[in-house]
Image 1 (cartoon, one colour):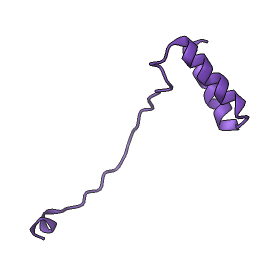
Image 2 (cartoon, helix red, strand yellow; image 1 turned 90 degrees about the vertical axis):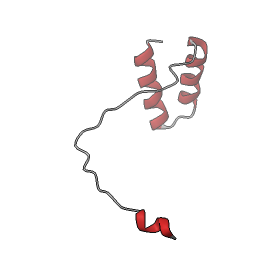
Image 3 (cartoon, one colour; image 1 turned 90 degrees about the horizontal axis):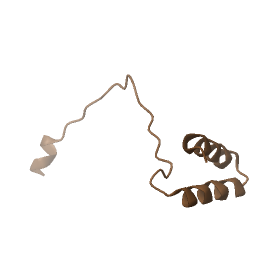
Image 4 (cartoon, helix red, strand yellow; image 1 turned 120 degrees about the vertical axis):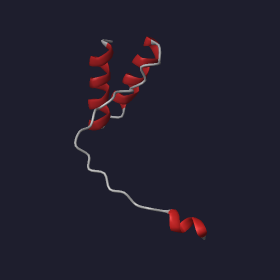
Length: 60
């Protein structure tokens, strides 16, 4: 219980943020294309939008 006295809270105001893309960039082209194809097969809007963005970023 001694440690509970050492617990403090802080508040941080976020003033800026940066977006980073991961999107399977460590995959070879064959795997990357397969991932995009599978995303399109779901027929879900967000998956299709993600696949479109991946295609643009990698140029495949």
